[in-house]
Length: 495
Ligand SMILES: Cc1cc2nc3c(=O)[nH]c(=O)nc-3n(C[C@H](O)[C@H](O)[C@H](O)COP(=O)(O)OP(=O)(O)OC[C@H]3O[C@@H](n4cnc5c(N)ncnc54)[C@H](O)[C@@H]3O)c2cc1C
Image (tube, rainbow, N blue to C red; front, top):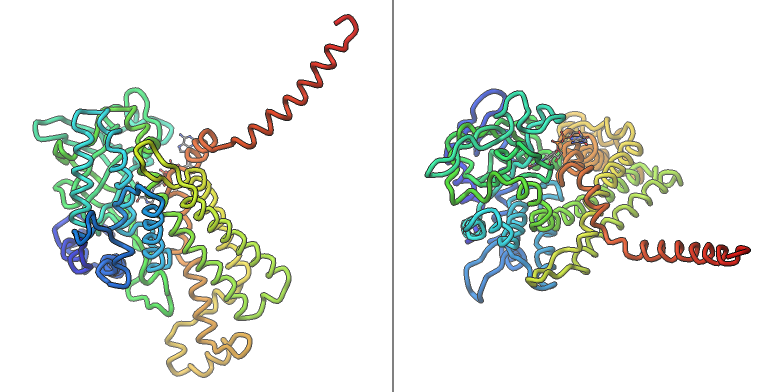
């Protein structure tokens, strides 16, 4: 089934424990900080019913059968992999690449669990079936998931079981015939207040001896008794409009810490527990990272396209782009965008085919994008700030261009080639929403951290990247030197 935006919003009315600013939110659908993001997510659901997009965003298992979001598909051909890519691109365009965690993100991620159901069987009989049943349930009901993988920062120098409070990191408290009772917290769950389900699994940090009770993977409905969602302070004041804040008015995704206060997780929702090996390997041995990463490369590429074009238009609006130093900066941004685009292309054009016939995006290109894009993006935002200069600050509101001083504002905020002030300021406002506004800053922070701690991801890549050509060349050079050395040794007098 595919839900409509209205059905998604109706589902959110089920009572849940969400806190913002110290107060419990009675109805997330009407709460100001959530209202616009919910509409943005709802539009993504509606797109699946729109004839313009339906065949791109959905698939059926047999001709004329039930439609499902294509993010759930485990691709068995290059065409299917690229079809998923087309859907991710379409979703990303709908939010200008600014929603990192629309419903399709976790749909893509748990398709990676579906691909790897056999892996779960190792940690308990029936594990594979439980995962398959869960993914099918989520897909068939077109649910919106969040995930909470990390432990609260508390004291990073100590393992979970040595924290001052042994229940600050989420752990098993008790086993009962019905399931596990769990207590503690997990972070950071983007979009949590407005989702249907929460999936928890370890983020690949290495748990050590003594941490067994903390090593678990499960899912519960967001409305489960004892689940408390504590949100950060909202970044966007109420009632922004799309002229003054074209992105932040619509696309602020909330982040939250989730406290599990003696929550019962039924056995059919426990995918593994008490297993350090499972916890330390799930991220690397299943499809979760690669399948969700495929979507993220599309999103990053779409936002990069917008960001670089915005930098160019900003400079062109006051003709600073005629200066060679500015031109060089813009040219370098274009090169970064094209590099990102090339990584995306390689992800899909050179996939890896597994023994089970699944088509995985090219792992090297995916990791390279995940590691490089945060720096690409930081550079893009920096160029906007350096070239926009005062123009990014002097941005009156739409009111100035429609009220008493409209003529003055259009005259004195004008750009080059008689561009009216209202048009020039609009460009500067978009640039500021990307590069300076707190929602833009959050997005940049998101790029740096969404794939997990970059240090661990990079050091894993150092071991996994295909360095075949380099190694071959290296061995050749070393062999050349060794041959010279051997010849020299042989020609030594007396040898
Ligand atoms: C905007 C945003 C959205 C996010 N959304 C989600 C989400 O939806 N779901 C989710 O699960 N997560 C989410 N995350 C969390 C993200 O996965 C983490 O931020 C990331 O994994 C880094 O972990 P951390 O923030 O706990 O940093 P920490 O682990 O606390 O690291 C902080 C610093 O300490 C260093 N450090 C920490 N431990 C060690 C160590 N053992 N050895 C050496 N150095 C160390 C790190 O290198 C880093 O510089 C989000 C994060 C952001 C910023």
